[in-house]
Each structure stands twice: as structure tokens, then as C-alpha cells.
Length: 77
Image 1: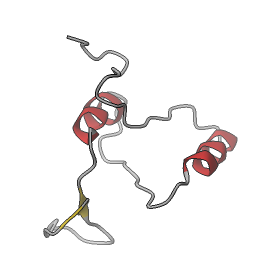
Image 2 (image 1 turned 60 degrees about the vertical axis):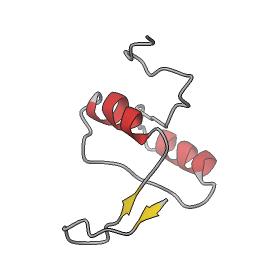
Image 3 (image 1 turned 180 degrees about the vertical axis):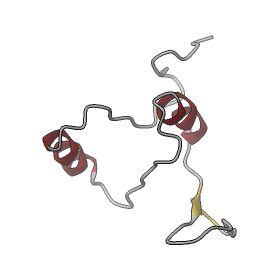
């Protein structure tokens, strides 16, 4: 969901709400020491993006887990 608010920053920036993003941000981005890098695609591009980053040698890929699945290191209780 695109939120109507001023991010008070510069460049091509906006604010969106993504289900389960707080958990993803905490366990994948901050946990992997990538606190400032997130990308969102507004189409079904996962298969192509996955193949592209693998070809580039990227070995750390993460995505939002549904609320019933835990991230590595997340307390299941």
C-alpha cells in the first residue's frame, strides 16, 4: 500500500506499507547488516530478478516470510 506522507528526504523516494516488512527488516536487512537497502517491484519479477542476481554472484537473498514461518535466528515462541 502506498502511503500518502512526506518522507522528508530527496530523490525518487516514497513510503509504502508491506505486510510482515518489520520482521523482514529486522531479521534479514538489519541482521545481515544491510539496514538501508530495500527494493520493491510492482510486477511479478521475482523469477527474473532471482536469476539475474545469481548470475551476478549475489549469494544473500531474502524475502518476506509469512507469519507462520520463522527467519533464521528468529525466536519461534
